[in-house]
Image (tube, rainbow, N blue to C red; front, top):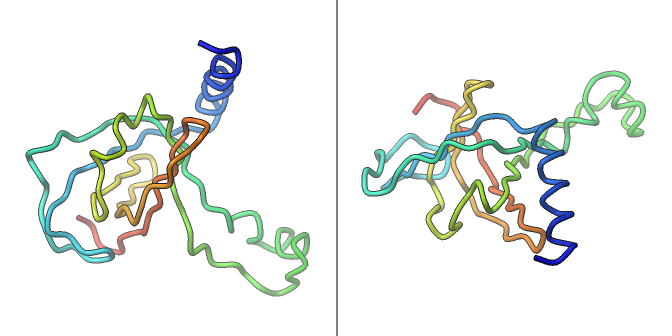
Length: 135
């Protein structure tokens, strides 16, 4: 293994140790992006892992945050969110499909996968859309 790969794995361990939370990836069939149609897909197993939940707009919310971002009275509503997960946790990204479900147990929220962004650094972004109703 090259020194760069070893350093990458050390950094992933530090990031996950500080920021990761439990996630569950549930295979789903017949689903729709933001709806509750479809059902669990029993032909693929549920994945229990740890990942970093990312909501980029969060830094610009609240009174101090909006002023710091130059948005005096505006509140930014996050439209993008994803989980950043290492390839060792995710396994084969081809096993996960659009509309599969992601559950964040510490937050009690369900999401659907919109797409997976590959990574040159071994940390995939699983892009999410939050479901408004429980699955």
